[in-house]
Figure 1 (spheres, rainbow, N blue to C red):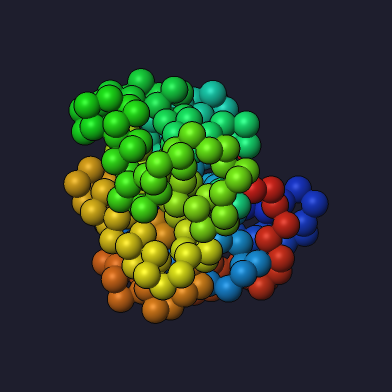
Figure 2: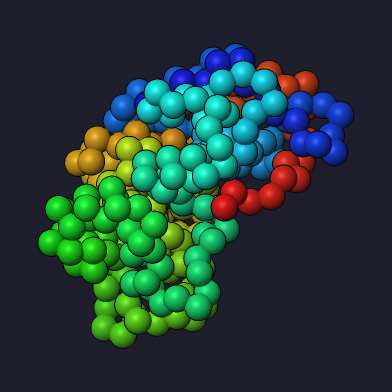
Length: 240
């Protein structure tokens, strides 16, 4: 699913590399837990995995395609068709309601739209199914602007949006940080179930070590990343 070889990334304004990874491979359907402190570059790595950023050296292959060899439009197409991203800051569209935000990936990807229709009957029904599984299907909520939601509700909408259309890779950046214990457990169970049914690989970043035993494999980011200053603040932009 993912194959990183000799990847190095440096922000243009920085003197030292933020990311230096010799080898990282993620198998189809694997659930990988990546743990590390804030400011260590985890979000930057996720942006590299999704093709939002490109490395200064090395190669990142997603589904056999070298992301650095593609144009910006080509990376956008790969990401739209094959990657579901749960952003740390959610990145919901403020002028769209709950349902519209969840269905949005299917407007950009015929592949995901077809998969959503196959699983739910139509895109709206599949969006409703995912929201219901996240306790977000109460009357009046689906048409509410996302700006009127609590932080925890926004986080669940972001998760449903990432999962719709069964992308082959789901990337989750601190996805449980705004959820209470009960909803956190329900969220992780849903994430695992949807990824298992779709055969999706899951790369899950968190500093919450209590979640690690639930995953197939755990990596400490500070051990994976060979950059000399992994504790420096990750001042790069949020992935788009």
